[in-house]
Amino acid sequence: PSPRSSQVDGANEEALGCKIEELKQKDHALDQEIAQLLSEGYSLEELEKHISLLHEYNDIKDAGQMLLGKLAVIRGVTTKQLYPEYDLELND
Image (cartoon, rainbow, N blue to C red):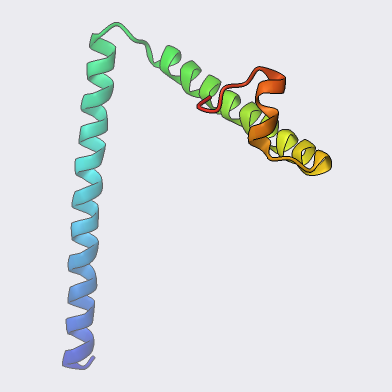
C-alpha cells in the first residue's frame, strides 16, 4: 500500500475510534438516565407502555390531521377554519 492509502486508513480508523467512544458515552448516559428513573419509582414496563401510548397517540393525531386536511380541500377552506367546528384547539 502507498503511504497515502495508509494515511487514509489511519484517518478512517481514528474516526471510527472516535465514533465508538461517542457511542459508549451515549450508552453510559442512557444507562444513568434509566437508573435515575428507576430510582424515582418508575419501572421499565411502565416506561415502555408510556412510549407505546405516545406512538399510538401520534399515529391517531396524524390520521386526524390528514382527514381534516382532506375535508378542508373538499370544502375549499383552510384546516384552521375547521378547528372551531370540531371543538379543536390550534395548539393541540
